[in-house]
Amino acid sequence: MTPKMLLAAAFVQRQHFHSCHSFVKHAVVSCRTRAMTISSSDSDAIVDSAGEGKRFFEMEQRNWEQGFAAYDEGFGPLTRQTIPTLLSDGGFLPSNIDDDRQFKLLDVATGPGFVLTAAIDAAMKLDLPEESFSNFQFTGLDITQNFLQMANQRINAQLQEQQHKQQQQVTIDFVEGSAESLPFDDGSFDSIVCNFGILHFFHPDRFLSESYRVLRPGGRLSFSAWAPPTRTEGFRIALESIAEVGNPNVEGLPDGPNFFDFGDSNQATNALKEIGFVDTRSVELSEMKWTSIKNGSELYDVLLQGTSRTREILLGQTEEDSAAIASLMIQKYDAITDSGKRSLAMPALITSGCKPTSV
Image 1 (cartoon, rainbow, N blue to C red):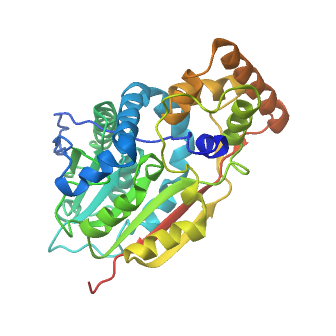
Image 2: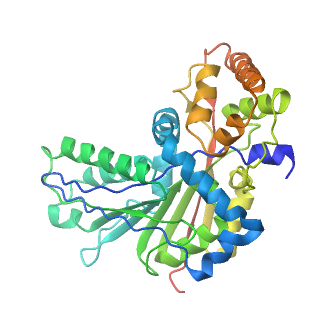
């Protein structure tokens, strides 16, 4: 892997998981945790490339167990900006509520629970009768216990806020598991969404195949990914700084997929078509801004504390190189934003597709 490719693969912002046992009055939150298992059919994903898949997964899990709070605070205001389009393109909310069965939404790499929170809020705003609202079922899946716990706490706080307005039953299921081997039966969900999670999977194509399997015919999948670093200014600042004054070839960093693969609309939609999805489309959210980052020092700290592969690269620098990278990122931030007079541009791409009704 070239230094440029390695750096491109380094930026991994994502969402993770946990489950807890808590209940809100007038709302039922069903929480369960399944231990992640690797079936024999997926064993090659763990041992291929001289064990790189397993090492990559362990790196992701280790860093997200530590970086969940920094991600929540640092990336939350940015990644939330994709959610309305992500849900809409993923088929949520449905135009009609079927009283005969539940409409089931799966949020893969649920992280701090931003997407589920927004989905629940949107459903509540429909002002449906209690018997219709109970036809919604929400599931969040992740590989990290701390993220699942955070998501559970966030949603419980949301429901407590809403309970004086509505007395509706909410069914939420938190599941610990792998996106590359989803622990669900075929045809389980009407809608699957994944907000910047696909960047964290060693085999993103397996996630797409698994999503196709567990979707019901006519169900939709949508996922988000960052635009290339030529246009995502926060990533460009870090990439250039590491390349210019640091060491991009940190020893021991496992290989992984290129971080920006799914920021290309043709590549993203073609990946869905190869699986069998139809009605594929990509939309770019070009106006996204990183409003929570006020200076280059904050940018460095968020990338160090609230990411996975980027954190590994930054931690792998010498003390001298670390200081030089941090200093150059401050300079580049000031030059790009006119010393903080505007926010960093961080456009993202949302790609979606539909499982055919006749399969």
